[in-house]
Length: 61
Image 1 (cartoon, helix red, strand yellow):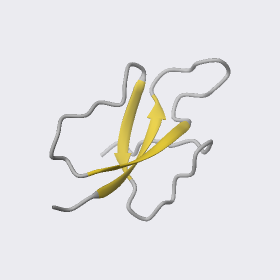
Image 2 (cartoon, one colour):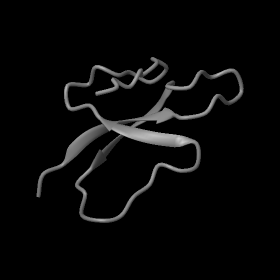
Image 3 (cartoon, helix red, strand yellow):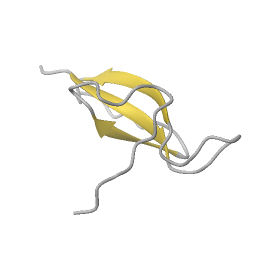
Image 4 (tube, rainbow, N blue to C red):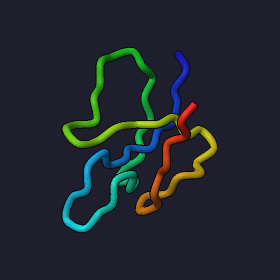
């Protein structure tokens, strides 16, 4: 079972944090259902380029 690393970021501004602010990092194997919570989303970040407090800007394809 492969475990991947993800950055958790805000999808809404909260308490002065910008949309896209990385608030956590998680290791997830995908075996169980997991959601980051309301107002949050995840992005795969196996190279650890997104640090907590940095701002993630999704690339539109």
